[in-house]
Each structure stands twice: as structure tokens, then as C-alpha cells.
Image (tube, rainbow, N blue to C red; front, side):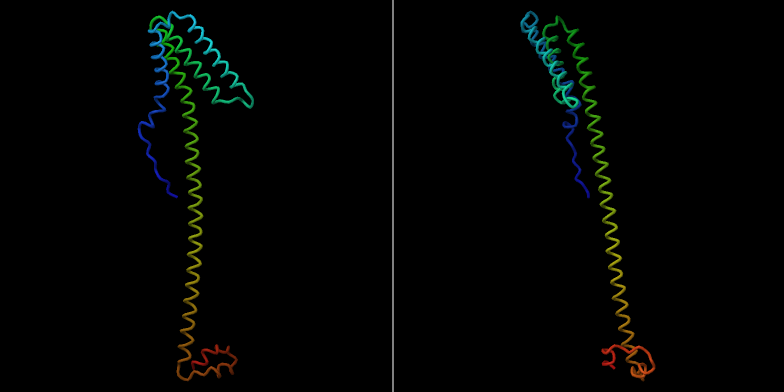
Length: 202
């Protein structure tokens, strides 16, 4: 019932923790690069970013309000895309760093809030799985112990029976070898008759 222990690399453990800030920082950097290349004065690109942001937000809202409670994965992806486009648009068209950095901080906080919820869910699922595995392991171990005790009792019973049969045979042989022992006299006296094999040995 022993299960192999898998030690995850520290990079694999840290990657989910830094993913939100890496994502928002990447969007901010790309937006500022876009700003440096003339995005601040492009009205058409600004209108395109607004349309894309509104479209993905609307798609997320429709996905969240769909049948059977909606699809959380699609809705979350759509809202995350909408937020990324909004942050990129502001970073690309804002004059200076104050507003882009403020939105970056807000977006990072929101991303960590959403991620923390998923982390808690994953942690609860992992703990529930580990507890279930431990309970099943304990049940199997109990069953194995019971079966082992039962088998041991049967073996001891068989050994006791064999020892009793051996002692009985030894006692009959010893009695038959005593001087003056007469099995016919015992039979005539109304005592149980000895087995034929014992009578033949006498």
C-alpha cells in the first residue's frame, strides 16, 4: 500500500505562484513598447482595442450566463482576455506611466484573487483525495490483518489436531506394548474395542 513519493522541482512549484504577475507584466511591457512605436496617436488602433475588449467581455458574460450555470472555463478565459486587452490598450495609448502602472497593479491583484480561489479548490481536492486514499489503505490493511489472523487460527487449529492425533497414536502404541495387555479382555468387559491396526500390532 506504499505509494511512491514524487518530489516536484522548485520551479514547477513556483510557476503557478508567479504566473499572474508575469502575465500582467508582459502585457504592460508590450503595451509600452507599442506606445513607443506610435500607438498613442493612432485612433484606428484605439477603436480596435476598445471593440476587442468589449467583444471579449460580452463573450465572457454570455458564457457565464449560459445554460446549466454557464461554462466557467470559457467565461474566465474571455474575461481574462478582455482585461489583458484593456490593460494593453491603456498602456499603449496613455501618456506617461502613472495610469498604466495603476491598472497593472489592479489587474495583478485581481488575477491573484482569481488564482487563489482555484488554488484553494485544488488544495481541497488534493486533501480530500489523500484522505480518501488513506481511508482506503486503512480498510485494506484491516482486511489483510483479519485474514492473516483467520489463516493463523486455522493453521494453529490444524497443528493442534495433528499433535492430538500423534499423541493419541503414541498412547495407543504404548498401551499395546505394556506387559499383560489383552484387548479381548477389555472387549469382554464391555470397553470399546481398539482399532484393528492396534490389535494386529499386539
